[in-house]
Length: 189
Image (cartoon, rainbow, N blue to C red; front, side):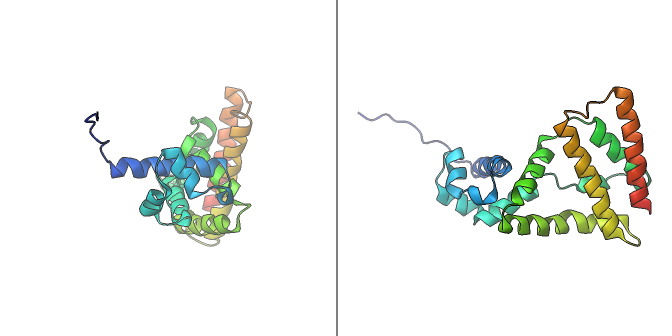
């Protein structure tokens, strides 16, 4: 005897989103070279051919994951004159953003893979460093963009490692003030 059970409805957008989320999780936990399309497909419960159908290759899936993460362009939202204070307060006081943290983990894990590092460097320049340098403008804009980004990234990693810097609220205020002044000086000079 057969049961008349309706097949599960197909939802291409939900499946694509689930694959993308599984890839984000995998690439944030493992190096590019250690992640396979079958692994990602297994995490979602779909056939690996479906992953390829939606994203093409592992490289294209990786690029889509990078694109889906916060790319730092929000740093350029707001007045330029307020950049240092605004960004420093965000780094020091805002709650942890899992998306930003996962992208940072993906970038750090990519260092060991020539293929992934090439993709990260290329997309980082295209989607962040070049627009950021253009936003900064003036002499040595590319250098100042790199200095500002390194400072922000270093402080964000430090915050995660120390679970909030391990400072008193008053010390955090002073840290934000000093970091803000330093970032503003990098942007302005």
